[in-house]
Amino acid sequence: MKDFYELFEAGKKLGKGVSELIESLSDLEPSGKVFLDCSGSKMRSGVSNWLGVRIIDGVEKDSMAMPGKPAPLTKRSLMDLKGRINDDESGINLLRGLEVTLMTNWGPTKKVVLDEEGEPLLDSHGSYVTESLSEEEIESKRIEIEFTIRFNARLQGIINRPPNPVLLIHQYDLERLTDQSEIGPLQNTPPEGYADKGRVTPEGIDKKSLPSNFFLDLRTPHTAWISEIDFSCVNSSRAWKDFKELAKESMGVQYQEIYGFPPVYLKLDSRDPKNVILFKYESFDGPNDPGEGIITKKAFSEAFRRLKNSSKST
Image (cartoon, rainbow, N blue to C red):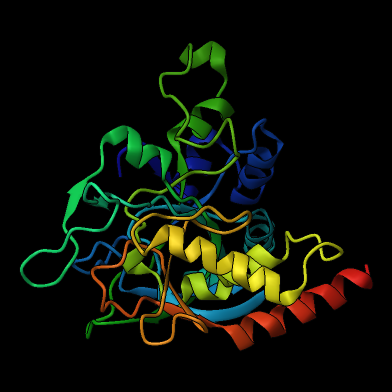
């Protein structure tokens, strides 16, 4: 694969054992990386046939496809890999349980067209009329969320077993570990994310490759919003009224920014606008779009009470 070298071959090239190579990578500044590449068998969507499980606070959650491009191991898995190699583990057992870090890189690409009175325009089918965002608008609305996947060595959508995933290092790190007096200046630039955030942002990670409840497990819009309230100044009824105002402003077509939460679209449920708010991570398709989640007045009040009590104990 262009710009990558198989880990064990890189060790031979440098005259180092793989365990020593991993230690040398860790000593670099910024730290070097080992990548797990599951692209040997991919689906049409671009994700791998190999499966993993999403990790939240150290706990296994949803099953999801491994990315179809090299993804960097977490620091803990890098040290775990070193120990496994010292214990002479090999094959799929060497890889099972290793964790990779991914960064989502998506956001809205279109917006709903409004009329002169600020109301959404509808087409002949009753759906909202949309237009594409400019590149500047797309960049400004981009959503970035980091998450971790643990490789579990299971397969999906395939009968014949494909080759095992492979461990790689990037040419950038290989050159940094090589005697510069022999090879001259670095010929390769670091992959995106090395210098600023110490991680690589993989391409091809999109919302379709994630479980449908990925965002819902992070938090809900109302709990993120309530957590920023000054409870000494606002009661539950007033907070619900203010949150409904956000939904009125959004109308399901203008995203709302809530601290600690991805941009989200809100709207009042036309069937029960006093007690129910709908939300979605893309603009609603039309007045009858049910969204991706609901927030009832009761759930909001319970969350308000719980978070208020929690704030008193801290």
